[in-house]
Picture 1 (cartoon, rainbow, N blue to C red):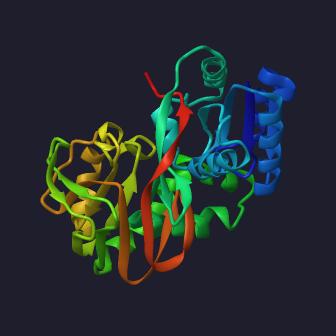
Picture 2: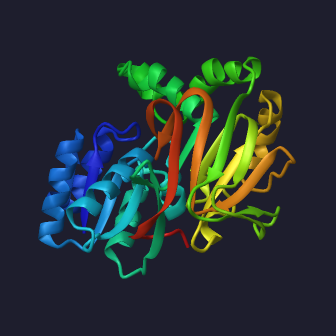
Length: 323
């Protein structure tokens, strides 16, 4: 087993690095750039490690997967995400520990004979990931980058900005106020060369939509696609994603700002349903926006665009899922 840690991830501290080094010694790779991460992964693959614990958030996980599929697509080790990022959706899927003390049990799982499951992936404009989206989520990521990441706050303020406090401050001072006053933008989501299906409130496929058909066109507050249930910090935004065989979950919300705030408590357990929330199973779709807007790929912000495509990837990767 090897451990790779992104030192730039919001949840990684000196204490985490020290504890991981105590636990695994020279099998710990601490990186601070994409190039350094790729170099470490080459060493891990060449050494033949069968499991890899990944310290970082969803962006780190996405980059590791992309690098592994480039370096050695037929020798991807079993992956175990550690809860050391900002949103930690992929860590929700693995059921990773929430404390430094829990790192030992996470690594024990990675080194054990616990059987992995195949994690389906998306390709967003050709880039592998587990989720993508535009609207409220990308707006929040933009605000968080400006307030916390780009400023690289130090001292007590910097420590408070990491993790949940930084998320809350960003949301309450920037993202939520804009959500309440800004008119909804417009989007068109259409299938490409594969069919899609409307989903019932229980996640059952109902109406089949032919290739080229429009899944949704109209106002939206968030439009996203995923192969995993979680979107961030325990929020089950895609309740059907992990049960859709050969497809991914597309969810579009046209809720207003006030309606979105009222819906938040029930969005965490995945039970929220509303006529303005539309669910689909799809294999290949295009997101087309009326005006340029930033979107994210695995939590990493992309430049404003009017179109991006999402396709079910041909490859999967082995992942330890929560029990």
